[in-house]
Structure formats: structure tokens, C-alpha cells
Length: 157
Image (cartoon, rainbow, N blue to C red; front, side, top):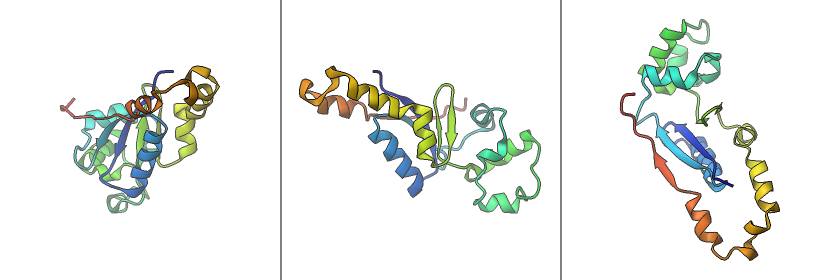
């Protein structure tokens, strides 16, 4: 079975984001990592990432800017909100984990497992006799390859 891939958006060294990142890496998911504190998302990238769903689901209600901007009382138009988030990526709830078709926001391991079908992958692998430890002397090499990480670098897309 091919390894799972996902893009992982985090903010600095937040403990909760790091715990989710470790959970994904331990599950063998290959992550393209983007630290939005060091490499903020542009308006165009945010537009593509957030899509046309409910923007409130992506907002970090614990952010200072959230309260300062009065987002707890009134939600601005989508374009204005995208500009605000581009100016301060701390407004985004995180981590954000995306695949080609799906995304999840926050630290809900159950939702992340469902999105990436991690339980099914583990079950299928354990049922395959070719993948049993006894039949695969090179299992450590294959496991380490499954944990490779790459960084996503923004080119102002």
C-alpha cells in the first residue's frame, strides 16, 4: 500500500501542533510541512486553502486579533477576512491537515484518522502476510522511509 501524504500547516513550535505532527509521522504519513509563522500564507493561498466553506471554522478564537477585530461579534465579508488572516496568520486555527481532496482543522485525532483512513491502512497492512514482521527482514528500512519529511516553500503562488 502506498504511503499516505498530507500537507501540514502549523504555527511555530506549538505543543499541540507538534503532538499532532508526531502522531501523523508515527502513523507513517509523509508530511509536507508549512510553518505559517515563518512562512505566512498569502491572500491567494488562503483563498485556495480555505475554499468557500464556513470561514468561522478556520478562525483561532484564542488569538488576540480575533477579539481586537471584533470577530466574536461580527464576521466581515470573505475578502476582507482573507486579508486580515494574511496580515496575521495567528488568526488561523491549527493545525490544518490537507490532502488533495479533504482537509481538517484542529487537533481532533479521530477526524484526522478518518480523513486519512489510518485505521483502514493499518488494518489492511496487518492482514497482508507480505507485510508481517517475520516475512519482511527489511521492515526497519521501510518504516524509516515512510517517515520522510519535506518542507513546502512558498514561491508567492
